[in-house]
Length: 352
Image (cartoon, rainbow, N blue to C red):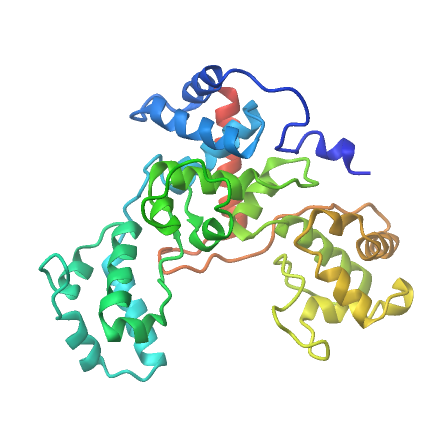
């Protein structure tokens, strides 16, 4: 059923080997802006990632990757983050306050000498990139009791690299990584090769029902299938008359069956028309992180009800309505802003 749609969006090859690696590298390098240093190196790392993940090296996929790189880092493997020391101190203060740790104890811990001779506070004041901050946090967690207490053994730096990919995603998808790992996957994310490999996996490593790349770019920011799920939420709202946040989150993680989230609660009001009880609806919504959710009974029936109410066909993908919330962001931005900026870069790349 999805074959015709997926033909234009699938990322993994179905048949014979593609062009020679040297030709792929040359095509990638040609599409990287001329101002970028070491275009050959960037192209080589991208080609290896494509080959290792069996991603088709066509113009659309190459330009999708280059557009995200340009948006997220401007082709810098470990980009500088503005005001990072201030952001880091605020995060430490927030965690200390939540744990009722006096500021005096935090300040005392930051005066302790670190492995390079400087105090942790001095190193914190000098950090410029997420890699530097991540390394500092790792040392504090491993060597300073206050660090273990504040961070609960979990490094607060959760994204990194040229594509700003999630470190948890990289750690969960490390099988098949084509390079030796002298340290950890976290450290690999901050290298050019690792940041590109895992960023490409997050961007192109799954099949979608989308006919436009802008929805894949929105998913890169909001999570796999968020654009498809936001369209489903809009259909639920149309069918029920219940306003919903169109954020792509179909379930509240860990919610008991008797305390569902707003989307699940709205879907349940359609139970008689859907011919599904609460358990069946929950099971269907749990597949919201899979491609086949859109072909399931729940989605098909909800869209049929919604389109009957609207009197028109409804889109199967829409950019989620999400305000980006990160201490690194200094102005109000949204997933739509991100997706549209990347899409503009993508179209520029295709024209090169």
